[in-house]
Structures are given as structure tokens and as C-alpha cells.
Length: 452
Image (cartoon, rainbow, N blue to C red; front, side):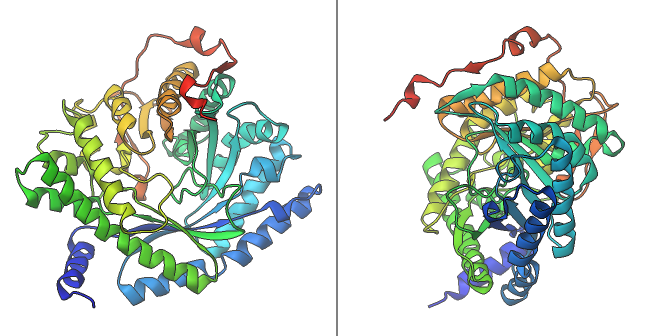
């Protein structure tokens, strides 16, 4: 039987505490679209995507009306295009990105992810050509997201790919310089990329997934922040229990939407991603949760411990609420998308070094961080290498989404708009790591990866 108090609590979470479904993402396999004729390939992909997701937006809108739960984004992820279009030239991949953009516009979805390549151990020709196409593809489109997996715990780190991605990020920043280099906000570099992530910019439809699938990303930092504040100065065990209980309730909402969307669309239900995804809106901040735990400002000493507690408790509560949990799951710390982190970065309490330390205990990695536009490509590669090594050694997903904002420096800010928010330009180390990055080759896999 439904408990009246639980119903009223959920209504309050939605109305006052920014509870929402951050994304319903349909994954679509494109392997049956492969063709050696680029024009036929493009048409088959357009037809498959628009046919499979033709009712995605309307079904999400039906669910919003039925349950009164906001669904902020409707998205699509596809098979990494470096495999589907393996014979394409860089120009061919740019044309394919525009085909997907046309499909996104036709369907009314917010983003399509999957302009992606996996190069952790080396590059096939398709991957190399797709990577070369990234800057132009992200310049010519607004709804296409790109990701490149450069490392896994099993394979180690492809440092040739890390070096090239530093250059690609710089090129993308320059080509979108008239919009505060926003192209880089749609590009992420991964270690241990998950195959069922519903969140952009890293969503792809993995090789072990069904033909189509529905994955849902829940949110709710505001709900957790209120619960932590109301818990007062309890001990850490009680604090963790408070977060677990609220994460359970948030995840149940996500499971309801995921299963209903899948049923109405006639496609399998995949996973619920438990990640707490903040926005620039007041009261929707992961940083505020940490500050409600007792930190004067996010980024001060104790922040990593607070985040570790939060991330672990969210997962423990979430896995009790859903049979199928996946994606990234935990707490996101994207600087530009979190009002509390923006403020902490502006006054210098939250630094790039501290963010890197925090990524060792939470989901994803260095996310939506604006840095000076004149940052060297090798320095960006060094930032990537540091973060990716955390993922490889700790056998977890980590990623880098940094934005060298062309023409801006420390003290300036960049405006990205919407859920992407705005960000102060954060300082980076000026001492060079170019000789290190240019060594090339692969950093070997850690010894503990040998588990067979």
C-alpha cells in the first residue's frame, strides 16, 4: 500500500528541492547500418535512429504529465561511430555527425552521444579518422557529443592518444572561440568508459547492449542537501544512513520512470544511473551537500573525505532501490554546473589540484573546468594523463572535460548557458610537461590488473 507521507515527501522534493529525472537516454545499436557506401551508411543511420526513437520525446512528456516528475533531458546514445564508419575519411565522419544532428533536430532530443572511439591499446583507421574529425564535427553541430577512451585498467594508458587529445581539445576550443570554446563542453576523454552511461558527453551504446535500450539518470543534489542539513550535527554513521535513505527514495523514482518508459516504447529497460547531477540553479548543488556536512567552503581540508562518504552512501542506498544499476553512479563535480563549486572556484578554495584529489573517490573526473585559452596542448595532455591514471590504478571510470577558453585568462569567466552554466577560468601549472608527454607509447597496465 502506498504511504501518504511518502507521496507528500516526493511532491515536496519535486516542488521545493529540485528533484528531477536528469535524463532518459535511449541507446541504439548501429551495427546493422554498416555499409561500404558512405551515402547509404548515412541514410541507414538516419532511418534507424529516427525510427527507433520516434516516440521517445512524446513518451517522456506523457510520463511527466502522469507522474508529475520533470524529465529534464531526452537523449540518444549510439554505437561508437569509429566502428560503424570504419572506412570513412575525416570529412566523411563530419558528414555523419551532421546526419545525426539532423536526426536529433527531427526527434527533438537534446543530445546524441556516440561520436566516439576506443583507443586504449591502439588506433584502427576509423578511430584515427574520427578523432581528426572531432573539432570540425563539434563546430558544425550543437547536439552531437564526442568521447574518446584512451585507457583501461587492463590495457594501460595510450599516451600517443593522450597527447593527440590535448591537441584536439585546443583545436576544438579555437574553432568554437566565438562561443567561449563551447565545443570542448561536448568532448570528454575517458579511462574505463562504461557501456551504459546515460549522461553526456560520454554516453555510448556499448557492444554488449541490446538493439535498443532505455537508461535513466536520476538527480537530486538539492534533496540530499536538505536531508543532510536537517540531520544536524549527528555522527558520521548517522549521516551516512541519512544519505542512504534519501538516495533509496530518489532511485525508486528513477526506476519507476525507467521501467514505464521502456514498457511504453517497447524496448528493454537497462539501468538507473545513481549519479547526483547538479545544475547552476540555487539549491541544486553537490558542493552545498558537502558544506552542509560541516565544511565552511567546498574545497577546504576535509572535502575529499566528505565526498567519499557521500558517494559511498548514495551507491549503497541506490542499489537497494533498483535491480539494475550502472553507468557512472555516485556524485558529479562539474564546476560550471554547480553553483557552490563555481563560488568556491572563484575565491580560490577549490583548485584544479583539489578537484583531482576529489575524483579519486567519486564518479567521473575533472568535469566542465574552464582553463586559460593559452594553455599549451601538452599541459592539457598532462592534465588528462594525471586524471586517467587515477582511473587506471583504481580500476574505476575517470574522465576529463576541460575547456581552454580562447582569449580568456584567470579572472575572467566563460558562459555556456543552460545546464552547462558558467565557470571562472581556473589557473593551471605553467611549468611544462611536454618532454614527458612526447615520450609516446603506452604506460603499462598496473600489476593488479592481472586477475585471470
